[in-house]
Length: 185
Image (tube, rainbow, N blue to C red):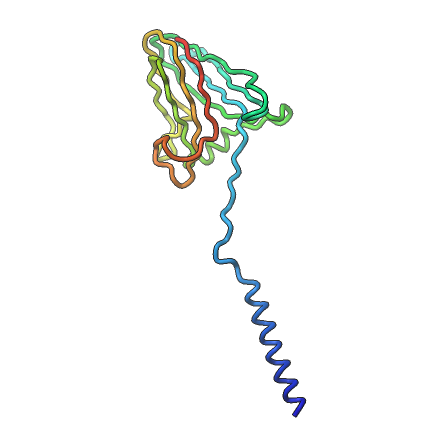
């Protein structure tokens, strides 16, 4: 009689151990969200090309240690001629390591459905039009700037990160970088 009880206890114990083992291998019901680490952007380069004569102008904002810490090392004033038409290209860079400069623009272009560049001109006579799209909404890495009469003001350029929520407006998402450039024309 003792052998039968032993076999029964062994069978039940094995069954419980198997059940616990199978249960411990199940995936969690809420897997962790994949992380999309933000890139460090230390530099914004604004390239203006005069459409009439082909002249290329480059203006920079550089803060190589990132936000906080030391002040920016370069913060140019954008200078344009009145009554001109410029094609503009933006470049976002990580220059925190001068031996390994990274062009973050490549990643922004690859993830353009999640990014939007916003322009906010203040007190300048210029019309800014984004010329690149993600197939649905504008992106803003490429744009045209049509200047009017002479003026002095600023243009704030913001890169918005809008994964899964992009709707063509600048009101939503996180700001990856924002620079207010002085402008003279």
